[in-house]
Length: 507
Image (cartoon, rainbow, N blue to C red; front, side, top):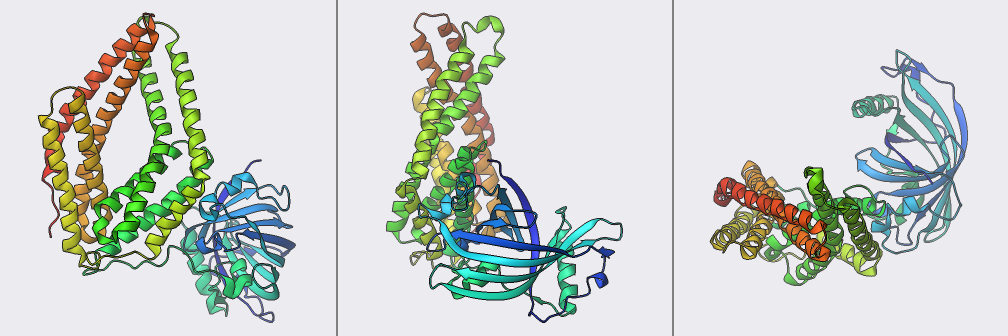
């Protein structure tokens, strides 16, 4: 079953049954108005019993009639904009798997069923520009709703809607202009977010993720950190769908978000009561480990494959590409099966619940209620001092595995410093951005070092497994290449680490 997606940009208006239509010909920029087109639509809306999708501004429906019959999933994209994913009609009571995969991070194992049925008598008008191009569509809807969630009820209303026809960066200005002119003509911009919101009325849930406060100078330390975490968790929920749908690089992106969240929680744990943060760190670490098995296989496969490609053909002894592909495919498939099991587990859904609970109602400690400037600067500078300590340990370590491990610890400290600085950029501005950039550079250089170390360890295993076969020679050559790459990365780090080791935030 194929799905397709579009971005819709629209505005809604309230209209009494007796309100006359505005004179669409009089709107600036409109050259002609198309003949009215009549449609009878029926839409069945699906959600959990607790309206988990509605609480996040998500709409899932099956609509018949009109020009776009099928399943529609609408995901928030910004004020007045949503991404709309379409799937064929299929069965009336079974949500397509491709759409359910996109919302499982929000429904979290709870059953999805019909919560309302809306029938709409629609009259639509195409609005064309002076050159004949289609600019927008104006629709006049008479709606009847039958609500089945909570206390069953029936209601009717009328509304207008304007949706731009193309999305080329000018849609916001066009919508603003149309809204202003329709308002001047007597229309009332609607506060309704959707037809379903109107139908559910007082049952409509409060939107999740909207309880934060903007940081202002002199604000408390927990506010910018909470806001940063809220953004990362929102991205995590979106990335969940990409992993389920098998999108390229999705596991890597999800793992990175989890590590970022965990790192920020660790760096700023003193701003919160300890128990919930400790539990979240443990859950996030375990989840990142599950994702990491697949990601490590992915990185290793690509790296060793590229190394084989770099060798002259006469040095590649045996069908090593095929052997590598087979070995890594088994490893990746096993790891992906573990990921899918984890993402469908009650344990994972509880973790998401706990993350949102911390963001919606942060368990703030006395330090979290202290002024942000000095408090967050101290915590970022503490992470910077930890980086210096790890650097000194790595430089003083004996050459070999001990030194490699020490530089990996430096990389992890640089990553924590990077995310700690990023979380408070709203407080410390360009200074925090400089710390973030310098730490990111260190992290990237030592990431190359760690990839080489991991590849070298894998090559030793492969060479040993080959015994006295011809392939062992090739693996030995590749191991030497990786050792050289690791040593080069260490030297590169020592040349570029000075800035990151010195930067601090002003208290």
